[in-house]
Length: 170
Image (cartoon, rainbow, N blue to C red; front, side):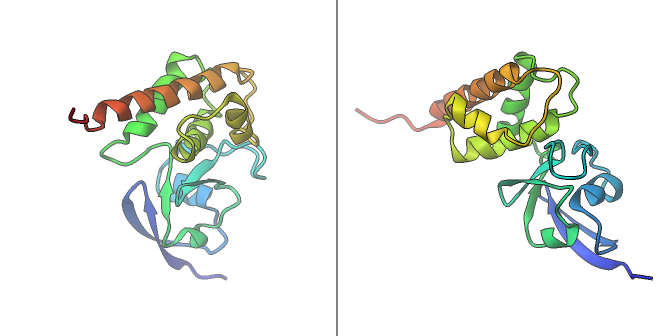
């Protein structure tokens, strides 16, 4: 029998110290041990994107990532930090307003992947958006609304940033 091992995970800015079996995936630990069910389980093979989380800002399939490998890294999920995340909230609002959430199953993974995309590229082209969505399956929207939502989120985030920028003195 394999013993449990202690791990310390930092998820959405909060530290969790838990004991797990060493082969458990990050997806399993998030959902079953930490109760964060926003990250969805689907294919279990890294093919659909529903389990996407950010690890140190990079989008990864949590169904393929061992939880023990996530120690010492920043993990971000669709739930976001307790105090809120303006970028995540803007992306979620855009997905809702553009109708990109039809059944909602793929939405958490797409929203998290969008956050990573817009952090690296605040004004992506349509082709760059579609490239960032490779590996994310949606059976409901046909991707048109999803691309529109990401474009809308990018504009909203740029507008918010420009309103917060210090005004130059003339």
